[in-house]
View (cartoon, rainbow, N blue to C red):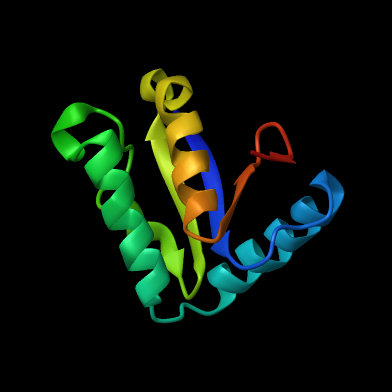
Length: 110
């Protein structure tokens, strides 16, 4: 079982409902057509590995973190055990780098 977060580069939505709509559009688009991962996503993934640890730390359910990325959209799969411990760090890092961090389990932005 994993804990998922969706991250995308761009302006922060006005509210959780707008974030949910954007997430659905981006997630559907990433499944339909895989785009080259942007430099911004690669930089975010590197920053998250630096702050949360590499694969040996038991944080990532899929490795590398950007393996589920397409264009400016990245879907993170965290181990359920590590999820709660690193979600705040991931959300803060993402916001500082110009990304929206969305929790599809809670259906809200972080």
